[in-house]
Image (cartoon, rainbow, N blue to C red; front, top):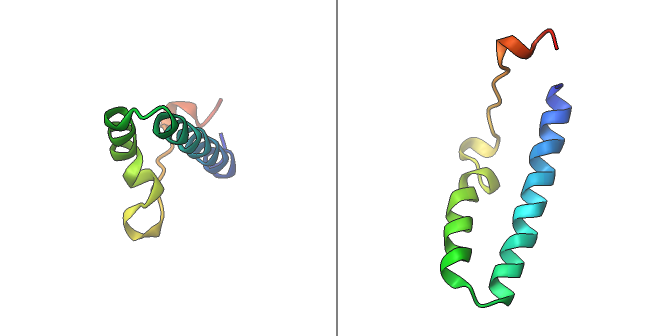
Length: 62
């Protein structure tokens, strides 16, 4: 997986999380909404403005 593909995967994941947060809020499931928001807070607002990605060495030749 290239860095660009990894960034796209993260973007798509964050989009899905955002949609799920909206669904939970619409269903008045505030505890579930808070738990999911807390879990992905760092991904949405990373320290330093970016997320450090590490390549798993075993996948370099895949």
